[in-house]
Structure formats: structure tokens, C-alpha cells
Amino acid sequence: MGQKIQAVKGMNDLLPVAQKDFKLTSAFWQAFENTIAAWTRRFGYQQIRTPIVEQTGLFVRSIGEETDVVGKEMYTFADSNDKLNLSLRPEGTASCLRAVVEHNLLYNNPQKLWYSGPMFRRERPQKGRYRQFHQVGVEALGFDGPDIDAEMITMCADLWNELGIRQHLTLELNSLGNMAERSAHREALVAYLQQHEALLDEDSLRRLHTNPLRVLDTKNPTLQVMANAAPRLVDFLGAESRAHYQSLKTMLDGLGIAYVENPRLVRGLDYYNLTVFEWTTDKLGAQSTVCGGGRYNGLIEELGGKPTPAIGFAMGVERLLLLVQEYGCLKADGAPDVYAMHQGEGSVLAVLTVAEQLRHAGIDVYMHCGGQSLKAQMKKADASGARFALIVAQDEVANGTVTLKDMQGEHGQQTVAATDVITLLQEWKK
Ligand code: HAM
Image 1 (cartoon, rainbow, N blue to C red):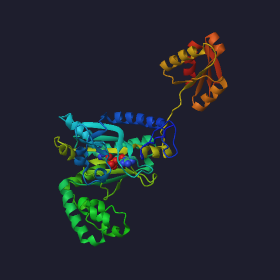
Image 2 (image 1 turned 180 degrees about the horizontal axis):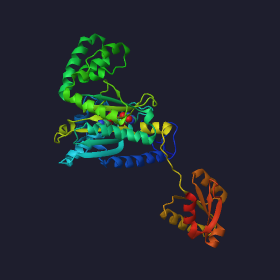
Image 3 (image 1 turned 90 degrees about the vertical axis):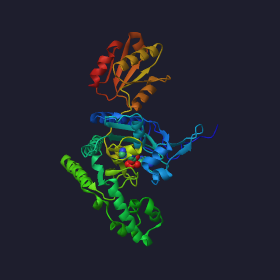
Image 4 (image 1 turned 120 degrees about the vertical axis):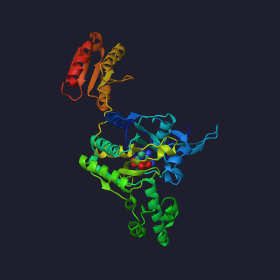
């Protein structure tokens, strides 16, 4: 026997059964996918599917060279044939925009799009943080807002309600202003931090020039007093940015969607401006952000398209489903309607035939294969969670009948002509 080969660290198998350290099951995930398909349709968003691999330059240019995601977390490799430098996508926005620009979808035509699939970041794995994880993302391209900003947040709230986890999520909101406002703030911030350079730790010194806003995120308690008194971005916002932010907040108030303003909310990717938001929970330990997004008005132009305002968000599916599994209300029904069993000569063909008829009538049938006594088969039927057992044994074959058993006991057991079983099942299912 050869040695067993294991999955790559931080990358999960999704199985029909829960694992010790990864409790999500494929049936649960599938129920979520069905919910997402209906939810996006409800809001009029169309799906886009892009490749998992892109040219590395796409992410460098959009997410930003100095970010953790691009700087140290990407899976990057040289394609041996044509010497291209490629990366596994660490997020979906950049790929979505690359495709939209490449195929000219925005020509006189704003787009409301969504996507889902695996993303890759080489982070230190822990509960809720993986190296292959999944996102469902939504992007609205060609809209100035703030009406669409409000729709984005409403859309999230609508999904949290449906999944039964709304009360466990907090909406954090901020405005990053436009580019000029941000750079004026940045200048003031760097000057302020330089005045306090003696206080800064190694991380903060490194970030001073690359990403000074992140210095304010410090967990170091000795830096926090200094960080709290630093120049605030909100004080640098001009009238237009303020008005955009204010009307979004007024709409959220009108919709009854509560939010917490967090002037420290900057997001880990460089492309944002104006509205940014995150949905966080205190139920998942350190990995508390379930969904994040915001406006990125300059990015489409940066990627070679016409200047186009845009906004979007993405949720981490594993994080979200861990929360839903524990506190929410998504029903994952992996059980078939009917567990079909058979025994004796001629019974296989009879059961195969009737099972196919049931399936055509919209009834899910699991067929027992591989023999065993009827008693053993009944045990399996019970364990399968199926509501009904269908039995074809010698008597049934001889008489052209089948026996149906209600596993929940309500209707007991009844033998009917094989041709009548669909009618009986439909009656019992009511
Ligand atoms: P992000 O905040 O980097 O934003 O990721 C969105 C969500 O993906 C996070 O809130 C988190 O739930 C999940 N996530 C991120 N990294 C991991 C990980 N290593 N393991 C598990 N889950 C993770 C974006 O990616 C933007 N593209 C969102 C966006 C769309 N902004 C505008 N449009």
C-alpha cells in the first residue's frame, strides 16, 4: 500500500458528512447555493463566471502591491510555456472587471453582476480562515449611487434575514472620500505619525509610508492613545463626499437598517473610495468579518475601461455558513423521499421500473443496491432519513403490486397496484 496523500493545508474537502474540524456538509452548502441563486434573481443580478487563474498583474494593479493579499498571500507561478506570470485569484472583483472591460459589457449598459467560487490566499489557517475559501460576490457597475449603495446593503440584510442570522451581524460603515481627499488626509497623517516616530513599533514603521491608515489599526495598546488622536479622514471629506455618505445613512435609517459608523474601517484592498462597509459578528472568534465591500469608482479605468462608478461586496461562504449552521435557519435536506428496496427473483427489474416512474413524477428515490435481507434494508431505509420505504418482494412481484411504508408511522403500511403508487405517495406526502 502506498502512503496516503493529504489535502493541502488550509484547503478543505466538502463531504456529505461533517468532519471533526470542518462541520459544513455538501447538502448544506447546496441548500445555500439554491438560496443564493433565488436571492440574486430576486434583485435582478446576473451571474458571471471567470477563470480561477489570471495574470498576476491584474491583481497587483487592482488590489495594490503593498496590500497583504498581493504582497504575501498570493499563489503565484510562472506558466512554463509562454512565460506569463500567473496567480490563483485571491478575490473576485478584479477578475469580474477584467472580463467586463475585455468584452466591452459596459458600452451604454450598466451591469448588475454576481459570482461565486473558490478564492486563494496563503494566510495562516485557523477556524474561519482558509487558504482556499469561497466567496459569493456582487458588483454593480455604472451607477453613481447612493441609491445603489443602499441597495447593496439592503441586499445583504435581506439575505441575513432569510438565513436567520440578522441579529448576529453588525453593519459597520465608513466613507473613505475621493482620491484627493484621501491623499490630503494621508499627508497629514504621515506628518502626524512622523512626529510620534519614536513611539512606533516595527510594523507601524514599515507601514508609515506604505499604508499609514493601517498604523491606526494597531493592536499595540501603547500606540492606541496616539492613534486615537491622529487626524481623522472624515474631517478631510469635501461637501460632495459628505452628501453621498449622508444620503446613504438617511436611506438606511428610513429602511430601518441599523449601522455603526467606524471611522477606522479602511478594508484590506486598495481600490476603495467613498462608501465602505463590513458585516461583522462576535460569534466566530477572531475571524469576525463575514462580508465586506464598498465603492471603487477608479478601478474600471485603472483596468483599461472608461471611467465608470462601481460598488460591490463579497461574503466568505465558510464563515457565513458556520454562523448559519449554529444560529441560523437554512434547511439542508439530504434525505430522499423514498428508499426503495427489493428482494427475490424478478424484483430488481420491478423496483428499477417503479423507481424511475416515481422520479419522473418529481419524487426523489434512493435505490438500495447490493442485496441484503429486507430487515437489513429496512434499517438502512430508517437511517437514510427517507420519509417512505418502498418494498418489492416475492408477493409484490407475483401480484404486480408494491408496498409503501410511512417511516413516520402516520399512514402505516399499504400494498397497492404498482400503477397506483404515485397517487398514493402524493396523497401521503400532503
Ligand atoms: P475581502 O474583505 O478581502 O473583500 O473578502 C470578503 C470576505 O471574504 C471577507 O469578509 C471574509 O468573509 C472572506 N474571506 C477573506 N479571506 C478569507 C480567508 N482566508 N478564509 C475565509 N474567508 C475569507 C474582497 O474580496 C472584495 N473583492 C469584496 C468586494 C467586492 N468589494 C467590492 N466588491
